[in-house]
Image 1 (cartoon, helix red, strand yellow):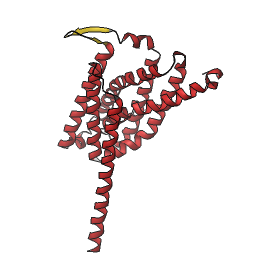
Image 2 (tube, one colour):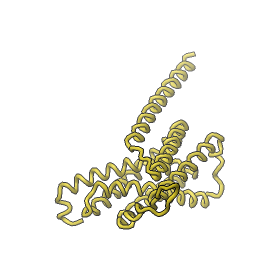
Image 3 (spheres, helix red, strand yellow):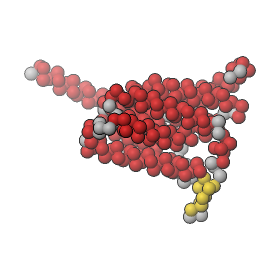
Length: 249
Protein backbone atom coordinates (compact mmCIF):
# COMPACT_ATOMS: atom_id res chain seq x y z
CA UNK A 1 0.00 0.00 0.00
CA UNK A 2 1.69 3.24 -1.12
CA UNK A 3 1.84 6.59 0.67
CA UNK A 4 -0.84 8.15 -1.54
CA UNK A 5 -3.24 5.37 -0.58
CA UNK A 6 -2.50 5.87 3.12
CA UNK A 7 -2.89 9.65 2.95
CA UNK A 8 -6.38 9.52 1.41
CA UNK A 9 -9.02 9.87 4.20
CA UNK A 10 -11.60 8.06 2.06
CA UNK A 11 -9.41 4.96 2.15
CA UNK A 12 -9.35 4.99 5.95
CA UNK A 13 -13.13 5.37 6.05
CA UNK A 14 -13.49 2.51 3.57
CA UNK A 15 -11.05 0.41 5.62
CA UNK A 16 -12.98 0.96 8.88
CA UNK A 17 -16.35 0.31 7.22
CA UNK A 18 -15.20 -2.83 5.40
CA UNK A 19 -13.42 -4.23 8.48
CA UNK A 20 -16.58 -3.85 10.55
CA UNK A 21 -18.71 -5.43 7.81
CA UNK A 22 -16.26 -8.31 7.42
CA UNK A 23 -16.46 -9.00 11.16
CA UNK A 24 -20.27 -8.85 11.16
CA UNK A 25 -20.52 -11.07 8.07
CA UNK A 26 -18.05 -13.48 9.68
CA UNK A 27 -20.17 -14.09 12.78
CA UNK A 28 -22.03 -17.02 11.21
CA UNK A 29 -18.69 -18.42 10.06
CA UNK A 30 -17.32 -18.25 13.62
CA UNK A 31 -20.43 -20.02 14.96
CA UNK A 32 -20.11 -22.77 12.37
CA UNK A 33 -16.40 -23.26 13.09
CA UNK A 34 -16.98 -23.17 16.87
CA UNK A 35 -19.57 -25.93 16.70
CA UNK A 36 -17.50 -28.10 14.36
CA UNK A 37 -14.28 -27.89 16.39
CA UNK A 38 -16.28 -28.82 19.49
CA UNK A 39 -16.25 -32.37 18.11
CA UNK A 40 -12.47 -32.53 18.51
CA UNK A 41 -10.49 -33.17 21.71
CA UNK A 42 -9.78 -29.93 23.62
CA UNK A 43 -6.07 -29.94 22.74
CA UNK A 44 -6.83 -29.85 19.02
CA UNK A 45 -9.62 -27.29 18.96
CA UNK A 46 -7.47 -24.15 18.92
CA UNK A 47 -5.44 -25.48 16.00
CA UNK A 48 -8.56 -26.39 14.01
CA UNK A 49 -10.11 -23.00 14.75
CA UNK A 50 -7.01 -21.08 13.61
CA UNK A 51 -6.63 -23.26 10.50
CA UNK A 52 -10.30 -22.75 9.64
CA UNK A 53 -10.14 -18.97 9.97
CA UNK A 54 -6.83 -18.84 8.07
CA UNK A 55 -8.53 -20.75 5.25
CA UNK A 56 -11.35 -18.20 5.35
CA UNK A 57 -8.85 -15.35 5.01
CA UNK A 58 -6.98 -17.03 2.13
CA UNK A 59 -10.26 -17.82 0.35
CA UNK A 60 -11.55 -14.25 0.66
CA UNK A 61 -8.31 -12.66 -0.53
CA UNK A 62 -8.05 -15.12 -3.44
CA UNK A 63 -11.63 -14.40 -4.48
CA UNK A 64 -11.01 -10.67 -4.17
CA UNK A 65 -8.20 -10.91 -6.69
CA UNK A 66 -10.50 -12.91 -8.97
CA UNK A 67 -13.06 -10.12 -9.39
CA UNK A 68 -13.37 -10.76 -13.15
CA UNK A 69 -14.08 -14.43 -12.49
CA UNK A 70 -16.54 -13.49 -9.76
CA UNK A 71 -18.44 -11.26 -12.16
CA UNK A 72 -18.72 -14.19 -14.57
CA UNK A 73 -20.30 -16.20 -11.78
CA UNK A 74 -23.35 -13.97 -12.05
CA UNK A 75 -24.01 -15.04 -15.66
CA UNK A 76 -26.69 -17.78 -16.03
CA UNK A 77 -25.23 -21.27 -16.46
CA UNK A 78 -28.31 -23.48 -16.45
CA UNK A 79 -32.05 -22.99 -16.71
CA UNK A 80 -34.62 -24.87 -14.62
CA UNK A 81 -38.38 -24.28 -14.76
CA UNK A 82 -37.83 -21.20 -16.88
CA UNK A 83 -35.41 -19.62 -14.40
CA UNK A 84 -31.69 -19.16 -15.01
CA UNK A 85 -29.17 -20.09 -12.31
CA UNK A 86 -25.65 -18.66 -12.27
CA UNK A 87 -22.54 -20.23 -10.78
CA UNK A 88 -22.94 -18.02 -7.72
CA UNK A 89 -26.56 -19.16 -7.31
CA UNK A 90 -25.56 -22.81 -7.45
CA UNK A 91 -22.76 -22.30 -4.92
CA UNK A 92 -25.11 -20.50 -2.53
CA UNK A 93 -27.82 -23.17 -2.87
CA UNK A 94 -25.28 -25.97 -2.39
CA UNK A 95 -23.73 -24.19 0.57
CA UNK A 96 -27.14 -23.60 2.14
CA UNK A 97 -28.02 -27.29 1.78
CA UNK A 98 -24.66 -28.27 3.28
CA UNK A 99 -25.20 -25.93 6.22
CA UNK A 100 -28.74 -27.24 6.78
CA UNK A 101 -27.57 -30.86 6.70
CA UNK A 102 -24.66 -30.24 9.09
CA UNK A 103 -26.81 -28.24 11.52
CA UNK A 104 -29.61 -30.81 11.61
CA UNK A 105 -27.12 -33.67 12.09
CA UNK A 106 -25.37 -31.77 14.87
CA UNK A 107 -28.70 -31.12 16.62
CA UNK A 108 -29.48 -34.82 16.32
CA UNK A 109 -26.10 -35.82 17.79
CA UNK A 110 -26.45 -33.30 20.61
CA UNK A 111 -29.97 -34.45 21.54
CA UNK A 112 -28.99 -38.11 21.37
CA UNK A 113 -25.91 -37.52 23.51
CA UNK A 114 -23.58 -38.79 20.81
CA UNK A 115 -21.35 -35.73 20.92
CA UNK A 116 -19.43 -37.10 23.91
CA UNK A 117 -18.65 -40.38 22.18
CA UNK A 118 -17.03 -39.10 18.97
CA UNK A 119 -13.39 -39.10 20.07
CA UNK A 120 -11.93 -41.96 18.06
CA UNK A 121 -9.79 -41.55 14.95
CA UNK A 122 -8.75 -38.05 16.02
CA UNK A 123 -6.53 -37.31 13.02
CA UNK A 124 -9.19 -38.37 10.51
CA UNK A 125 -11.78 -36.29 12.37
CA UNK A 126 -9.45 -33.26 12.32
CA UNK A 127 -8.92 -33.52 8.56
CA UNK A 128 -12.63 -34.04 7.84
CA UNK A 129 -13.62 -31.07 9.99
CA UNK A 130 -11.01 -28.78 8.38
CA UNK A 131 -12.28 -29.85 4.92
CA UNK A 132 -15.85 -29.04 5.97
CA UNK A 133 -14.71 -25.65 7.26
CA UNK A 134 -12.95 -24.98 3.94
CA UNK A 135 -16.12 -25.85 1.98
CA UNK A 136 -18.38 -23.54 3.93
CA UNK A 137 -15.69 -20.83 3.94
CA UNK A 138 -16.10 -20.57 0.16
CA UNK A 139 -19.83 -19.95 0.52
CA UNK A 140 -19.45 -17.35 3.28
CA UNK A 141 -16.55 -15.73 1.43
CA UNK A 142 -18.67 -15.15 -1.67
CA UNK A 143 -21.17 -13.12 0.34
CA UNK A 144 -18.40 -11.18 2.06
CA UNK A 145 -16.37 -10.45 -1.09
CA UNK A 146 -19.39 -9.39 -3.17
CA UNK A 147 -20.32 -6.97 -0.37
CA UNK A 148 -16.80 -5.54 -0.24
CA UNK A 149 -16.60 -5.16 -4.03
CA UNK A 150 -19.97 -3.40 -4.06
CA UNK A 151 -18.95 -0.89 -1.40
CA UNK A 152 -15.38 -0.05 -2.41
CA UNK A 153 -13.85 1.48 -5.54
CA UNK A 154 -11.86 -0.68 -7.99
CA UNK A 155 -8.64 1.09 -6.97
CA UNK A 156 -9.20 0.19 -3.31
CA UNK A 157 -8.36 -3.50 -3.61
CA UNK A 158 -5.40 -3.12 -1.15
CA UNK A 159 -7.83 -1.53 1.32
CA UNK A 160 -10.21 -4.47 0.91
CA UNK A 161 -7.38 -6.97 1.45
CA UNK A 162 -6.25 -5.11 4.60
CA UNK A 163 -9.80 -5.07 5.98
CA UNK A 164 -10.17 -8.83 5.39
CA UNK A 165 -6.89 -9.56 7.18
CA UNK A 166 -7.76 -7.33 10.15
CA UNK A 167 -11.28 -8.82 10.41
CA UNK A 168 -9.95 -12.40 10.39
CA UNK A 169 -7.33 -11.54 13.03
CA UNK A 170 -10.10 -10.10 15.23
CA UNK A 171 -12.18 -13.24 14.67
CA UNK A 172 -9.19 -15.41 15.59
CA UNK A 173 -8.83 -13.43 18.84
CA UNK A 174 -12.48 -13.81 19.89
CA UNK A 175 -13.30 -17.24 18.40
CA UNK A 176 -11.79 -19.12 21.34
CA UNK A 177 -13.99 -17.33 23.87
CA UNK A 178 -17.06 -17.80 21.66
CA UNK A 179 -16.32 -21.52 21.24
CA UNK A 180 -15.84 -22.00 24.98
CA UNK A 181 -19.07 -20.16 25.75
CA UNK A 182 -21.04 -22.18 23.18
CA UNK A 183 -19.63 -25.46 24.53
CA UNK A 184 -20.29 -24.50 28.16
CA UNK A 185 -23.97 -23.67 27.61
CA UNK A 186 -25.99 -26.35 25.75
CA UNK A 187 -28.94 -24.01 25.18
CA UNK A 188 -26.62 -21.47 23.51
CA UNK A 189 -25.28 -24.25 21.30
CA UNK A 190 -28.80 -25.17 20.21
CA UNK A 191 -29.55 -21.50 19.56
CA UNK A 192 -26.37 -21.24 17.47
CA UNK A 193 -27.39 -24.31 15.47
CA UNK A 194 -30.81 -22.74 14.92
CA UNK A 195 -29.01 -19.63 13.60
CA UNK A 196 -27.09 -21.81 11.15
CA UNK A 197 -30.32 -23.38 9.91
CA UNK A 198 -31.68 -19.86 9.39
CA UNK A 199 -28.51 -18.86 7.53
CA UNK A 200 -28.75 -22.03 5.43
CA UNK A 201 -32.28 -21.15 4.33
CA UNK A 202 -31.18 -17.56 3.66
CA UNK A 203 -28.32 -18.79 1.44
CA UNK A 204 -30.67 -21.05 -0.50
CA UNK A 205 -33.16 -18.19 -0.86
CA UNK A 206 -30.38 -15.91 -2.11
CA UNK A 207 -29.44 -18.52 -4.70
CA UNK A 208 -33.06 -18.66 -5.84
CA UNK A 209 -33.35 -14.85 -6.06
CA UNK A 210 -35.48 -14.68 -2.90
CA UNK A 211 -33.57 -11.90 -1.21
CA UNK A 212 -33.85 -11.75 2.57
CA UNK A 213 -32.41 -8.49 3.98
CA UNK A 214 -29.43 -9.30 6.21
CA UNK A 215 -30.66 -6.77 8.76
CA UNK A 216 -33.68 -8.97 9.52
CA UNK A 217 -31.46 -11.99 10.13
CA UNK A 218 -29.03 -10.12 12.37
CA UNK A 219 -31.86 -8.49 14.32
CA UNK A 220 -33.46 -11.91 14.92
CA UNK A 221 -30.11 -13.30 16.04
CA UNK A 222 -29.35 -10.34 18.31
CA UNK A 223 -32.83 -10.47 19.87
CA UNK A 224 -32.57 -14.22 20.49
CA UNK A 225 -29.12 -13.87 22.01
CA UNK A 226 -30.37 -11.08 24.27
CA UNK A 227 -33.25 -13.26 25.52
CA UNK A 228 -30.89 -16.20 26.07
CA UNK A 229 -28.45 -14.03 28.04
CA UNK A 230 -31.34 -12.99 30.33
CA UNK A 231 -32.29 -16.66 30.74
CA UNK A 232 -28.70 -17.62 31.58
CA UNK A 233 -28.47 -14.86 34.19
CA UNK A 234 -31.83 -15.86 35.68
CA UNK A 235 -30.78 -19.52 35.90
CA UNK A 236 -27.52 -18.44 37.55
CA UNK A 237 -29.37 -16.33 40.14
CA UNK A 238 -31.84 -19.16 40.90
CA UNK A 239 -28.98 -21.65 41.26
CA UNK A 240 -27.14 -19.35 43.70
CA UNK A 241 -30.32 -18.77 45.74
CA UNK A 242 -30.93 -22.53 45.86
CA UNK A 243 -27.34 -23.14 46.98
CA UNK A 244 -27.61 -20.40 49.62
CA UNK A 245 -30.88 -21.92 50.87
CA UNK A 246 -29.26 -25.33 51.22
CA UNK A 247 -26.36 -23.88 53.25
CA UNK A 248 -28.81 -21.92 55.42
CA UNK A 249 -30.79 -25.07 56.18
